[in-house]
Image 1 (tube, helix red, strand yellow):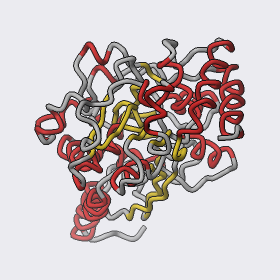
Image 2 (cartoon, rainbow, N blue to C red):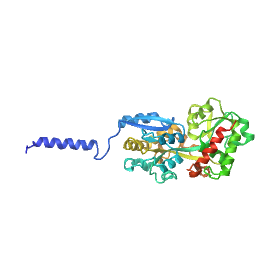
Image 3 (cartoon, rainbow, N blue to C red):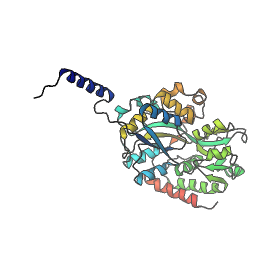
Image 4 (cartoon, rainbow, N blue to C red):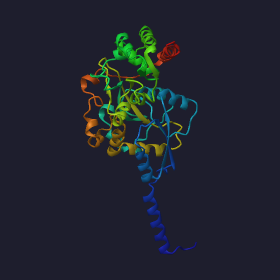
Length: 356
């Protein structure tokens, strides 16, 4: 047996030790690219750049306009995405369909930064599959030069005497659950009702409203407000706050009848090319300073409690972004309505197909 010189044995041990420091045993290597499927303009691009600089992983982002579009993409067999950003009720649907991976919490230690109010959401108890990313409400964006008082009622969009005054000057979300939900809340019902009679009333209300609607739009409603094409818009809180940074005339109101509270979530599809890299990225977004940078860019509320000290005061102290308890009590999560889902879709199809 050939003898190995002692100095070579020592050098070999040093090399092995250094290699162990560089990469812990059993830890996968980071992928060279991370593919994110996100809502448009929903993260500061600098965060992607900073992640790439620190971890050497290039982030590639595609965008979608609705939860239904995201679901359809995955159902059609899309396999290239590492991180997706579905809303609450869609998370529930994706879990039921077996589309989401379970998180390995060992790779996401910053998950402890999540506010306890969001740590066990109804759509994913215990955050088994997803981590809340941003949260907000659905209500009415408006031009403050047109309205002396905030239009804080769904009546501005549905009451014939009021809504007709703004005919052709407001948009509704191109989203079946959100638009049906707004009509249901105006009628005094739960936005998760499965009662066909109540849903029929909501459908008829939306059909009656249609002649006054400028467009059903989920991507440019705030831009239409800013361009003076419209004066009111049904939409998501953060979109209007973000637009208000550039156009101080714009603001947002939560209807007094109540509306939607929602949370978008960071999830990993079961087909993700690199679940480990996705978990490292999610953990990075959960750093307090990074979580704050997201909210400071989007003007959405953060579920990251540790981020609060780094969020701009004008965001943190704004009741339309962080509503007081009495307003929160009137808000509902959109939930999976199970067997009533086709009923919602049929009603919405009938609204869209109806004449103006």
